[in-house]
Image (cartoon, rainbow, N blue to C red; front, side, top):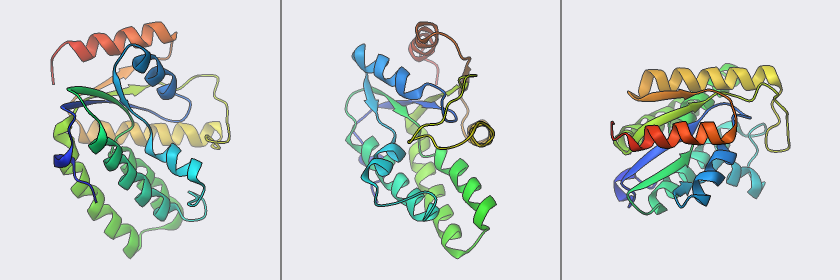
Length: 191
């Protein structure tokens, strides 16, 4: 497994939130402004179609964590914006435990996840928790219904609020105003 200490990037600013919170749109805008971005690992796993979160949720999550660490290790420069982080895996693990229960493979994954989080935390300077679009819509990559998407969002919020010291909530609104808020907070220099 790739560890965070092998990475080249100086600091990571995390964009997170439940489905339909505008993470991808914001990352595209940040990339267009010249910022380094780290794509969402889960999306790449879904595109490969060899692991399914419904057929093998734990196997899928293990691969998401592996790719998250790999993508972060390949990032270059002083600063990168990331679509999610290692911590999002905790929210997914809570969802898996609520559906399949706690069993030995889940316990071993939790141990690996805790270790990855300890290594990653110093690199995650800030977390921007993005409010979801009030006009939620499902898609092929976003199969959850509105209720499920809210549950996921609340799990993500809880994970970050209990695990990271610098979480900033970004209200839903026009792309330009969200982008302005993120860039202002990114440039303020605080941890």
